[in-house]
Length: 159
Image 1 (spheres, helix red, strand yellow):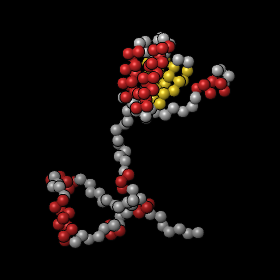
Image 2: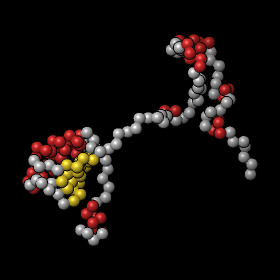
Image 3: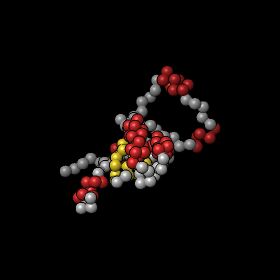
Image 4: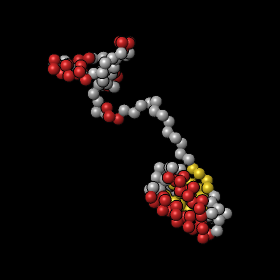
């Protein structure tokens, strides 16, 4: 079975064939194009010239040297008073996950904090989940909680 000559340049749209995508502009199109072009600096002749080739995915070009995204943070928080909930909520509003330990606070205040943070995560499309005895995980929308710690502990015979 014989295949024709595979020309990778043509396959990726980098053909040396100028005539393939180029048509002579009419004199009126040429005048419009020249009037829309910005003035070039004197040293522009030295700059490399690139030819745009029409592609179906030309809108989906992503630069390779894009700035790195900020790393997501998880804040470990141990409130001692109900008023400490403001700090935990501000972390959630700034797209940080919060692990809360209620070992140093009474149960009534811990319940109020969980109620407050449930409203906070609802408002930001986040999630709140109990991950241990007196430990909760609150996450903003850009985090996803997968799995259930209680089920894992039961499977391992620890819970």
